[in-house]
Structure formats: C-alpha cells, structure tokens
Amino acid sequence: MKMIDRRTLLKQLGLLTGGMMLIPACNFDSRKVSVALDNLNITIEQEDLMKLLVEVIIPEGTLPGAKTLEVDKFVWVMADDCLTEKQHMSFIAGLSKFNALFKNKTTKEFADEEAIKKRLPFIKEIMEEKAPEPPPLPLAEAKDEESEKKVEIPAEQYLAYIQEFVSMVKRFSITGYLQSEYVMREVMPYALVPGKEEFCKTINPTQKVNLNG
Image (cartoon, rainbow, N blue to C red; front, side):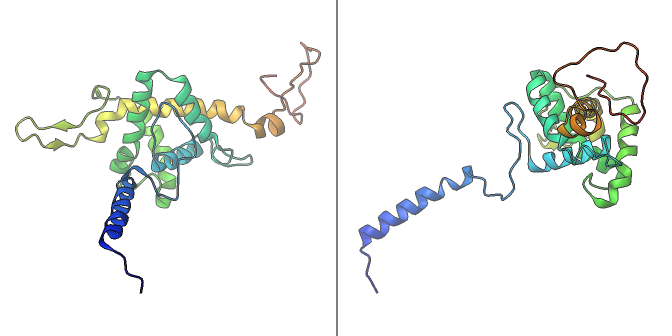
C-alpha cells in the first residue's frame, strides 16, 4: 500500500472540505424549472401547479388542451415580462397561497388525482367570493407581539391575491392558446400576407377561419 505523508493528507483534506463548502449553493435536483424568468422566482412545485391550472381553464377535448400545447410556459413569460413590480408581488402571493386555500376547502392537494373533479368547482367558487382585506405586500411572516412566535395567517386571508392570480392566469392562458402554433395552423389558419378584403361573405361552417386575420 502506498503511504501518504501527513502534509499531503492535510492538503487533500483541505481541497475536499473547500469543495464541500460549495455544495449548499448548488442544486442537485434532477428536475429543473423549465422556463428562464428574469423577475419571478418559482419552484418546481409551482411550475407543476401552473400546468394543472391552465388545464382546468382550457381542458383537453376534441382539440388539444392548454397543458398539451404548453400554454403554461406562455403564461410564465407574460407574467414575468408584462406585469409591474407590484403585480409581480401579487401574482406570487396568490400563487404561493393557492394550494393552501384549495387544501383548506377540499382536504386535498391541487395535484392529487382524487382532486381532479374538485378543481374547476373550487376556482368558480373562490372567484365569486368576497375577499377580505389582504395582508400588505410584500408578504412578511406575522409574529405574535408577546411571544414573537410565527403566527400562521389563514389562506382565506389571501383570497384577493389568489383571485388576481387566477384572473391573470386565465387571461394569459386564453391569449397563449389562441396564439399557439397548433391553433394558428390547424384550427384558425392565420394569413401572414393579407389577401383581398371581402366585406360581405357567406360563412361556411366547415371552413377554418381566423378571427384575427
């Protein structure tokens, strides 16, 4: 067996521990967030939730749904690029409390298979509710003044932010779906070069027409 002197051993241990100090700054999770955002910091769980949410808004049917067409990525980009700083905070606040409110009302996680039939009724219900005065933005942990312990604020208190979040997702989902390559090619073909305008035209129900054309 090759002997290692004390100086060499200490040097190698120094290199090893120095390298280990870098580990906490690295993410070795095999799954990564698939969209590059400049202003929003999201998690894998939140990205998965968005995929389910756009699927509820535009479900699979005779045509591919929003999840199949990856409309969720369009929603992320629009939210990241087109919202103000205050809207970003509201968007993230609603996103972060959405699943907690769903769980409070259904006892299930939004991602649970058993919760599929509860997703749409839940969204309809919360969008019709009157929201209480929400906590100020940016959100901060509430603490008891005497004990200084963290106080859990009920998810229902964040309803205004959740409603705004859902409204934004719905608006961006519809826009993204109508502008998707599949819809523009297969459902409502878009003419890149406008042809002759016809102000009076008989509608053929079997013909594919783009309303934005």
